[in-house]
Length: 63
Ligand SMILES: [Zn+2]
Figure 1 (spheres, rainbow, N blue to C red):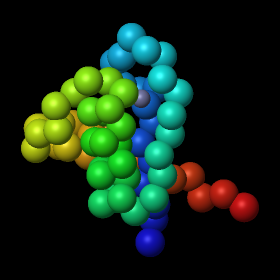
Figure 2: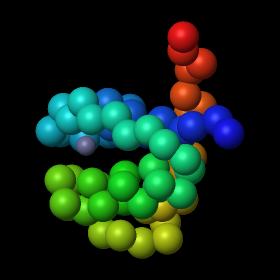
Figure 3: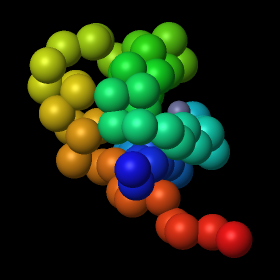
Figure 4: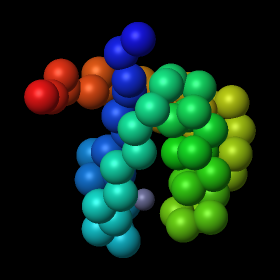
């Protein structure tokens, strides 16, 4: 299974957060939503999760 990556540097934010979260899509969505709420003061809504889902990228196949 391809892991997904959420890279906080791609989010419009003023905190210059550099966190990346990787894992299976559901895991990343959950962790990224919790992160967005606790660090970026977003509200955990279905819209937020959709936004995060749209920013997920496939993890590059490494060695
Ligand atoms: Zn962040």
